[in-house]
Length: 265
Image (cartoon, rainbow, N blue to C red):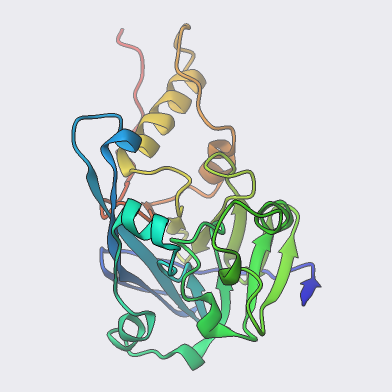
């Protein structure tokens, strides 16, 4: 069953640290980074001579309105996918228990997108609203995109979004297309104005995000072309003035450099 909804709110929130990140704002907001295993990306996909091992990270946001889970880990693939990526999974239940939570505590799920390495635990949360961009769900349901059983499982309850939405006070879902058409990120702001972005796979690595952000700054600072293009939604994320950006497949964290680069005199 699919539920369409407009999600709205108003207010504040926040984050800091690597691994478990505790923060206070209006009420206390805590963000936990969850280790849900890893997979091996073949050399042919990496563009180099060697394969690359990539983590699978999810995030639990504890807010005065409830607990939000951003991504749910690696789903069981078909034999071909298993042989191709050689995943090693950490059960979602164990990852939640390590931070003092359980499946039944989760009030809402936000998936950055619906590839099988981000939605593996969704069927364990039957009946819990899953917030997804309308375009992403439509693509997943056309087939040949992900593991179908992880999308329309018994008890699946989708709340489809078309664009940006403020889910809870200070918690925004922001479209960040690129990796997929319907990719989305989560922005959390605390009372003192500090912001954390959970960027999913909007960029594969913190260094890629940093490169795009520097390209944006160079353009805004009037550096003459040629310059590399950057993803236009970075302008929207910059409006929030993020202090940290976290990713789904990189343990590194992006942080802004204090000050602003200016042309030499």
